[in-house]
Image (cartoon, rainbow, N blue to C red):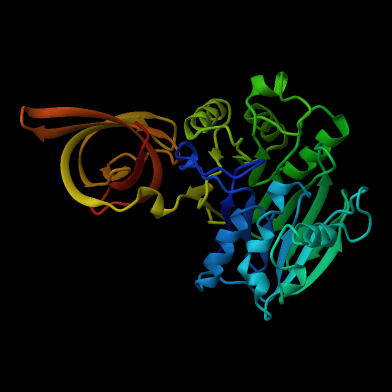
Length: 389
């Protein structure tokens, strides 16, 4: 008997507005969109930010295409959570079918979600209107406190603390529990209780970490967002297994997100920072949750042969230092063979010896672990890194 497996993919992880500058390249600049494929084949999409376009393009390529009916859970109606919908190619294909879920806004009344989608594509904001989408579409209003069944999966919705309202979702699958709580701010006791209900015993707890604790305590108070520290506190209290920091601020560079991740990992064992292309698999028997990063992040490599000293932290949190040879190198990163297996999204110090006109020179680089594969030699790990310095 094989264990049921669910796959969670991150297509957009940035909050508020998309970013395209090089300083946010590693984690990605598309706004929120996740894809969850449950063990029974049920396909969920969480939010419709600009990452939705990338997901649609992947389906168009025939890779993990749309199922008979795809279920789209929309947390709220702010631009960064809906702006990818007009560019989602599968909605223009007649054979596809989508069921949308969100809440009735007190500002819009009945059929709020349909109204929002129609309005953002109305003249003069978009060249074609909502009727251009030929896929079959259904809309269901849900309320905080409601639970319902989709296939073999239970979905629960809870209100979160965010301006104009926001729902968090808990999806219980045969492979594990995913709690999605983007856009929430601590401070309201009732809504904080809702957050904890969503995250209780979750295998994956995705939580807003847009601001640093210092920002949240001062000038960003009341903006409707949280910090890594709040996420860690909740995860500890409710026995969540893995915390994913999400909804990165558009002004947070990759370096800033690195620092946020390091701070969180000092307080909680299993933490990842959401990154475009990251895939988390749930349900592998006897194995801890693992995040897998996209191979494209290491760019095109060329064969090389440089002696190097590499130091970092293993997946178990132990520091290591190891002599090795770098055999694959690009302008942005490298593939390094190590006997140690470092933690994904951790930092490596790579000191390479490079020949030159004046003899062998040392080149000191900082690398960020984006891939882990079985090495070509027995007992080794092929570690893909992106250079940050």
